[in-house]
Length: 440
Image 1 (cartoon, rainbow, N blue to C red):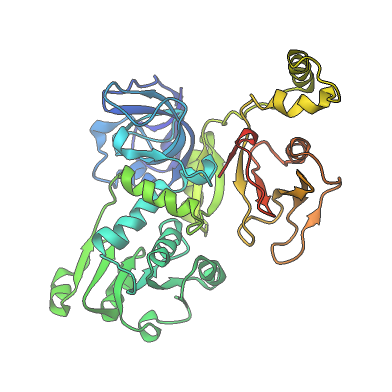
Image 2 (image 1 turned 60 degrees about the horizontal axis):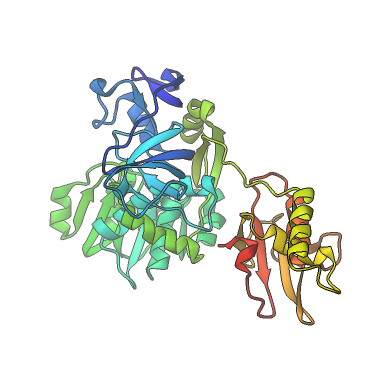
């Protein structure tokens, strides 16, 4: 299998894509076929030899800490997951995600959110758990409290804003001027341009400062924390003496893999309370370029590597469907008044369908394909539309109302790529037919 490894510490040039042996899981482990892997700042620290968990004795080393994919094998003591399950995971340091198959402790793994594809799911684990543990495990944030998040437009920050809001907290964040609309859309209550304003002059005291910037920003943050509040950082250890004098908790932490927390995060995503923003996508062979982009460019959200192309479920060809329909027609005794076409849907129902996503206004991206189903007399009809502007009327695709079967085929034919999702809108109390596929 292919993997991106380093044999020495240094710049991006030390990264090489190589053929290595595929690992076998221990009793408590699983093997994940990796569809996508996230790129994080800690990956560069490991590559440079600045992350103490990875030392010379660990070389050669596969980089990457979080992935999405499907279960390829399970250890003898593992229960609750089976081969083919779609999962995502934040990996412990001994395993790297920049490879086609990765071993993971079963406790690190959770079912992938149904609302996300592989790219979106890979963007979640490390950044999501880092935000979750910083806010709630170390920061003790509760509903009704106030939090200031430094760096709210980044990978961890954009999750932190949404998690805090989902739990009922008031959120302020510092960002650049170009990111003010972005974090406002995520739910931030107060947005501060860190270049134009001093946050300590415009923010009322908060219960928690979640520091993703460090340095001078961290030092200035002491002045806005309430007594008995907290200053929590992912970067540098805050001044303990100063914290004690001010009667606040101050700490630096390192996020730890946690499958249970991933499941909670997945639930928020599937409920529509948290959205995942992917800023850039690279191929596995472009891992060095991806790390450089994360460091040198201003990227909102996450950077993700596409590792293994996820196999799409093929549509059954028309001839196969016709033959199946004919066989059903024959088996039913060629009932009077029922033409062969009557049995087409039944002939195709045995096939596994694409997974569809539920349409939600102002949430589905512009340009997305949507099948709108409604009652027409005693039958269900649908038409395919393409979202032109989420704040205006939709552009209707050519074609009249049609059977669900035809609508699925029309939508599939108009997708820009095999990875483009198809959304479904159900109106007039239309019930989703499980034979059509899975609706997330």
